[in-house]
Length: 230
Ligand SMILES: [Zn+2]
Image: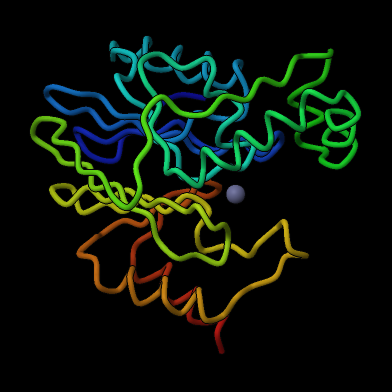
């Protein structure tokens, strides 16, 4: 499996359902390279960076996190450059790190999640760290030629949801934001989903990119999300 290209400045390393690895994005500015999500382990980060090397691309300067869930953050300790996360993401990550100091909790995670148990087979260690850089509401980074508009939003999936919009390329990265809340019996908060749908509609984008599927056209995603509300 290799890196895929969406535009001349936007690439992604595809998601891997077997171990719940999300898609990892690569935004190639003229000055700064920004990756989206750190992946679910050190191995995931290594594999992503290997795919960059094959394409002759440098490692990211920054990596922004879409939300705190393990599959998006447990690789944070292994990334090149600095990580960026919303303050709520860091709160969750610090709680997770504290819980992991108890080996019973590690065992619980492995028993509870087949994908995690496959990723962390052979006693690979789970390492959780908060981000280097933290923001409250939004953060805009001029990457050189393209801009990353990073902002917190309401989502049925997690309280700390962050979206990344690249206006020049008309691409919106949504993480897992459109999914139900796996930590609350898969509860789908319809009001939150409605708010998120309205937000997506208001953004001028061609592609909507979710973490665990291939890139979607905006209209296809909206049709699907509206069908949930029917
Ligand atoms: Zn998630």
